Amino acid sequence: MKKTAKTLATWLAIAAMLLSLCACGTQGNSGKGNDETTVWSFYTAYGPEDGACCEIWQQLFDKIYEETDGRLKIEIYWYGQHPYEGEEMLKVVKDGTAELAHFYSGYVESVEPALSVEGLPLLMPIDGTEAYKILSTLWGNFEQDRSGTLEALLEDKWGATMVHCMPASPQRLFTDGYEAVTADSLKGHKVRTYSTATASFVMALGGTPSSISLSETYTALSTNLVDGLITSTLFGYNSGVFDYVDAVNVWEISSSTDGLICSMEALQQLPDDVREIFQRIMHDSATAPEMLEIDKNDELLAKLEEQGVKVLTPEDDFRDSIRDQLEETVWNDWLKDAGEEGQQVLEQIKGML
Image (cartoon, rainbow, N blue to C red; front, side, top):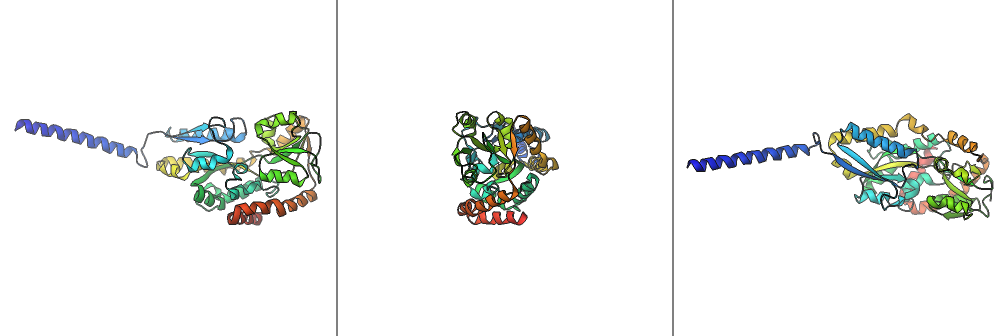
């Protein structure tokens, strides 16, 4: 009898210990108090030196890691460290391959046209600050509250939310041996483009667009396969475009942003306090006044001039005439693909101009 009682007491003690362990495990997975590190993957179509955004992303991720006491770690996978192209970033987040991905409007044009509206040639204001304010409104000012037209579309179709955004440098037309500020000035010339919108702009000036990857563009310029290219002022300067061209034509062809899209599911799975820290850091950075100055466009143009690149600006009347032409052709063609969602966001932008 004593042996039985002793055995029973032993089993009761073991059971109590197991229950205690289970209780500890449950507490560790609650909204707060979980000290485990969550590791997220971030995929981008850029290399580590491809723009000011790359440095800012790393700073943001480091700050998140620090303020969460190491409970959220975001690992960056640069282009070449993963098998995906820019146009696949929406899918990467939707299917759970990565929790965070790089969003660039020029890349998603063929996948979700309405989200590429900012890339329509000559649509957005010449002033980069005003353009960014418009885009911030469309993204709901990064509040994840569905108040922005583009934000709601991104959530509904792709299960993602725009948590951070920054203005990319305006897209410019760089040329070698000729100027492009008058009608038909691109006639007889081949220009590297990267989207339907940029290709249409080249054709509007009488040129022939050539779809060449950015990594192969400078070789193509050296061998006369193309004698012009469209890219951002920032990327052009940082990559040494001045060694291959002699003029930059200040058209402000299109506006664009480098954004960070996040899986809604992954975001909701974070402990409450970690999610709050993540969203606060992202929002505060995206809406900071200095974000509007990140491009430093005038400074970049001056640096290009110092390298012997001539800066050319088309007359306002000529720019407006080309814009009218593009609105009747390119914008309307885009609307056929973007549908009602595209019409809604385009009208919203026009109302803010």
